[in-house]
Length: 225
Image 1 (cartoon, rainbow, N blue to C red):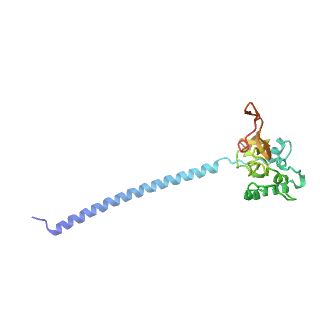
Image 2 (image 1 turned 120 degrees about the horizontal axis):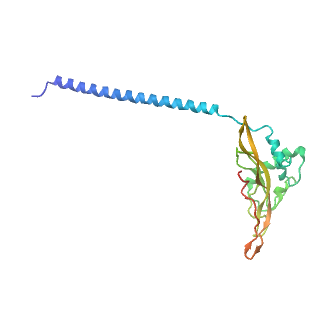
Image 3 (image 1 turned 180 degrees about the vertical axis):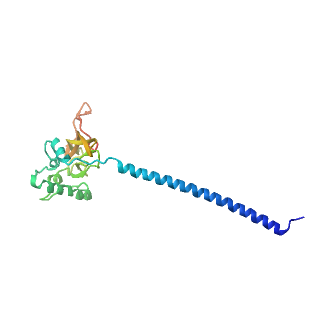
């Protein structure tokens, strides 16, 4: 004999209530877990902020530029790029003009003939025209970036096939960071090479099928720069 219809409905309603209560408990548990995770995240973020703010801050000494010039004989290394000579009172502005020529060289690439112009510096009128570019920024050295010569030419203009453009390297002294003391960075003297020009080079002579190649610093940029 089947149970009355009203009894079946009551049983179904009770089961639905039980299921709803179970879902409610699960949701409460998930919400509680979410709140705990959020609290942990807030504590971690607060710790990170406090740690960063409490970390010692360091800056370069005010005389770091003067020290850099001093270890290089009191000479500004930028004067190495003035192949036509330079004047002390106009050195900075003249150097900026040399730097600004990079955009023109980047656009034209390696010219097929010699560049002509009364105001063109020697760096643009050679058989291996070159321009100035900056090395990548390195926080651990001073200067943090250096200028160096670069060229778009691999072979010399109007030259035979056995002549190529090669860099002239110059060794200079730089400062390399060693630590922090009383809010100021400490530096020690180090050395690196920079390209200061490009020249047209004839293929090296060969002795007993072995090329004579004296040791040269790397041509792809200063060490560590």
